[in-house]
Length: 397
Image (cartoon, rainbow, N blue to C red; front, side, top):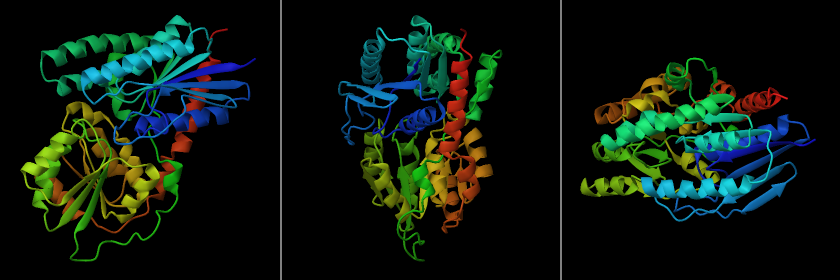
């Protein structure tokens, strides 16, 4: 008898997103650790993370024991209404894709809660256990994203959606141990697992080419790669920091997002000449930028809610061995300082602290073998897959 697992994720390869890489590794781990009688059906979207990065993908992709269905979405930007409309198309596509099918388990990986809520709805209507992978505390973020009555109202509404969603789940994983304080306080009767992000296999290979430090007297090459949104707050730190470091450092920013125009406008208004912004690139191409960098830079906005997270990019940066300049606070700052050598941490949006932190770094690459072994994505997702399969086995007869 075939056991069927439904996996819901808004992002999936070849899309460029942390959730995409994570769910890809989980699906591979499920197939590797389940029996031959297990069928995994992934329902996701056509690549849509960045408009400037186009990647063709089959609408239906089938292989032994795995089916991937990608729901086409309308063109959308990073605005709230656009994102809501895009998710509505995805939800309708999921409904059509699962109609008339029986599943033994639903797995939903979610950052902004709604994919988790969708998984809860599917699990409820087909009377199937639900495994949730929670990658963000959306309710905690809303009042800071929208500091108005609208933000308060949205948080009130989504807190109730969250309660119903968590209540429907048979098992809940939290992507950061920093989330435990929130979820333990709100759901004290529940036990949570904490399978984090990790280092992908491709980063266990040595970076290509020369990894020498820039000669004395040359500009320090600083690279940022990732989303450029309100959550990263680059427009609040980078223009002034780069201006202060003219003649000392040059910055390459690789990415796109809802705050890109704001960043570019601020750079222009400040007359910054040592920052280059380029569109997202494939991860293999990204290795070349990492190889050429002296320092890798990441930054989260100063929202209190971000004090609980561990940025997924941190694992990728750490694997390169390059020095890391990180604007982080709370759990992520403590995690970085305790686990990652040659990483200099400063308070988010603190320009003076950022300049001092950069200049205090040793520019020589280091080996972080212990970190890489401890946070191997393959190892973490294998343990998570076993946890998922245990949930399946605990299903009442």
